[in-house]
Image (tube, rainbow, N blue to C red; front, side, top):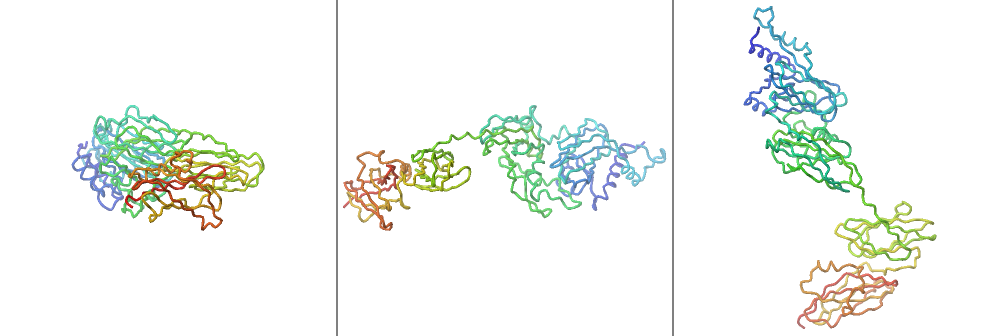
Length: 575
């Protein structure tokens, strides 16, 4: 019988001879001697282009479709614990784990002479070994044994669907290693709140963080297609449209320790979101950082509750949670969930009456829908819009066909061709800055004009040289249409600023909202020559060194008024 040391020497030599054709350089076998093991994994070239699985480190590699790949590792002693984890990325895998025992007796029937190494190699190559476990699918699958025999272990992998990435982890010290974060007793993700554009998720923390105090961060993945079973599958999906999924050159695999290709950077920076795609010139590939629009990943540190925002109403989303050990860069998937956001609140449609002005209020970023259905046949339809504050967007559809889409500031009038029995749907979209107020009129009678016409420039000009201690002189533009103009004044504090002025710029507030004491005068004015449609007015009876806010209102034939832009003036203090 051969001694244990002799058997292990033969085992190592046989494995070395078996792997020599795979590489032009001599490679040492992985070892679990901790000092030597740490030295080996720091040398990225050690396992690159190798079929040896190191003990206690995860490797990442690549499979070409219908091209099997075989890996080896050695278990040195009988009754050794063993754990093997295989993680498919973007395609299902077929994999099988088997073991071969080396012969205990030497050749020559007890002569004490060992068989030649070539003969040992031939025996290992020819024997299929004892199958321990096999699996086919795209789940992260494990083989775990508390007592494994010594021998040469083979891991055979095959992808029949397409070229794909995968990861493998093997260890003979599973109890002490624990590189993958442990899941809680209830690994489900709970949907605690559901809105039209938000979903709040909660989950129980990983015992690896709460009990073992290891650095764990959580990464949420959101998409509209399906749940993911591994972070590796997410990475493959994120890179499926760019060079990330380019196959390596024949005979080369990704370096198993080049973690930048397969997840998070190795530095412990849990407070920032970590990108999946990192650039590398190692294989001359350009990595694209542009994510797919239908798949998003957010890393949130060690929180165990998070609200996903900016979702679309009435849309089904899939949510996956991954606990990532930032020391090992290895992850474990919680049980994913899905949820449908709430429907958008149905807008009440406002009915417009022919020739009647309707007041509309729109919340910030909101929208309102209006309907106009003339009772009689008509050749034209006119929409008059008066935006009281910021600009609003108006869209008009006739029987579903878009006729008009424009932004409106101040007063605008749109005349559209009519159609018998037509129905008009008007969509008004508010400003992003704040709430919007407007007045709208729809009519089939072309002479029905409730809103007065306005010049393009609605500013009030003050003449500084004509300013005195008790009066100011101002001018404003008119139009070719004869309208009534009323001017009002209001004394304000010296610290009156633009912000206060802006709050009073509601153009829809008419003279009826002003105090009688603030009225200066009213007059009619127009000019057939638009170049000469200018009027001036001197406001008297003011106090020296005081500030006044001046407003000019133009009032149309239907009684509707529009306010010009307010003007702040100040009388001279000394004359």
